[in-house]
Length: 60
Image (cartoon, rainbow, N blue to C red; front, side, top):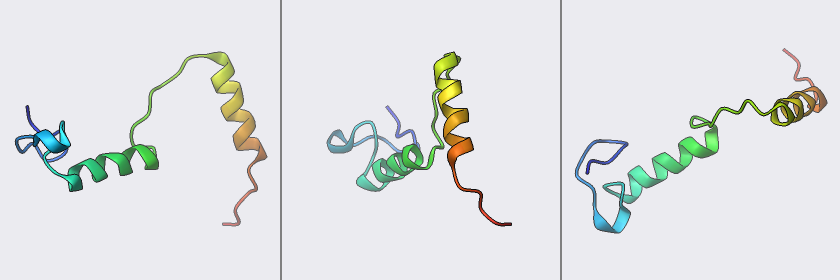
């Protein structure tokens, strides 16, 4: 099995990654929203629209 971040062989300690660094890179991608699971649930869409409309507008 290869590390999904850098493609090096995995390390049992960090599986499915090869190192702590690659595990942290992957976690950072989750936190930043690079990974997302799309939803077609109308309630999710309505909640997202409502959340966006309630955010304060940033000046340009």
